[in-house]
Image 1 (tube, helix red, strand yellow):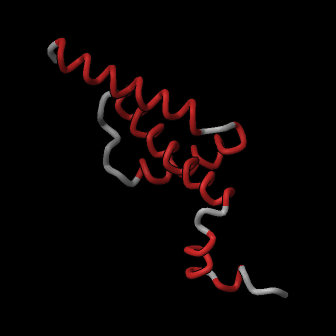
Image 2: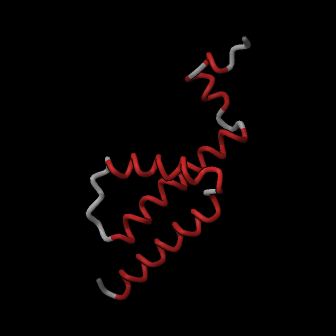
Image 3: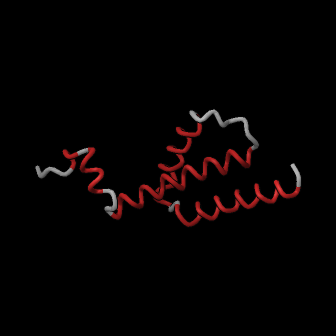
Length: 91
């Protein structure tokens, strides 16, 4: 790997790390980690260098935590209601 490729890789890993720090909060760490493990294990992307696998896993965790934040804010209520109207019916 030449110096330019190494710099790009380092910048990518740092960007994913920064996104993780800004997005994945304590209450979501376990759930996001479990989701990432499930997705990553089925990806076939398990034989890459360790830092790439870690960044790949962290990126999945970022996406999962961002989705959880959207749900908490109610941003997806209408979408979820379309999928699961039973959750919105009064009992």
